Image: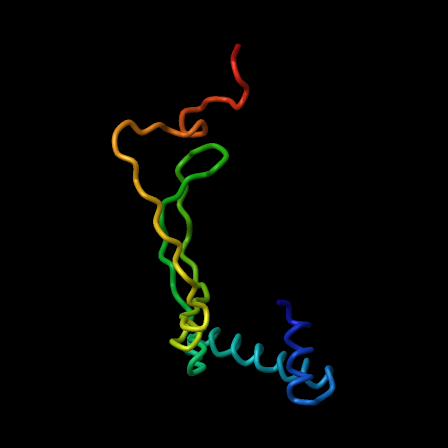
Length: 119
């Protein structure tokens, strides 16, 4: 779902013009961004909490060269879903596949084998 989809749904539900719904949604998002930027927590009961988290400097690797690099400290936005949101997205868990005992084989990808068959 995109912002335009939210605007359309809000306009239909509240029976207001789309441009008014767009302004309301934009204002809400702006207020959330400003509050999180000030390091305030924004809690929407039942939906969740937006907050700013600090990430300390850490060691990493350059994915192209494999060389170790230092990744600088930064701030990021975090979202903790509320109970009602978590319950709304609960999905049925697939039944676990039975584990075969005995001789286990590795996948072709893990062993480096190609998909081509050898004669």
